[in-house]
Length: 109
Image 1 (cartoon, rainbow, N blue to C red):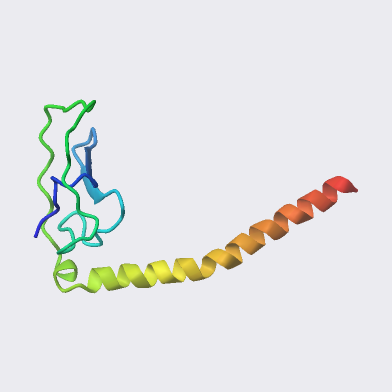
Image 2: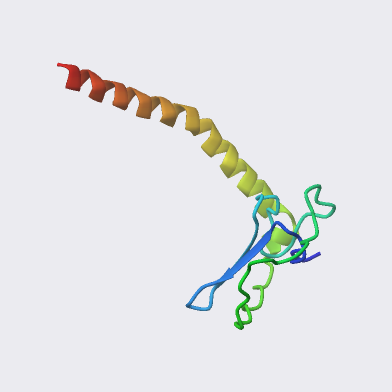
C-alpha cells in the first residue's frame, strides 16, 4: 500500500529546490513517505479542500523504498530511538529546572 493521499491527515509539500515531503500529520505512518499502515484507525477521507491554493507544480516521484522499510526494521529502529529520547526527557527537564532555580537564587542575592 502507498501513502493514502486521499486521507485528511496526509500532508505534502514541495520545496523550491524540488525536494518533496510527504507525511501523516498525526505521525501514524512510520514508513512515510512510502506507505501508511494497513487498516489505520485514524484514516478519514478528505472531505473538501476549501480555502486551499493548489499549485501547478507536480511533486517529484516518491523515492524508491529501502529494504529496511520493506522488512520492518526501520520502524523498530525508530521505536527504539523514540524510547531512548523519552527516557532522557525527564532527566533533561530536571536539569533545565535546576538551572532556572539556580538563576533565580542568584538574582535574589
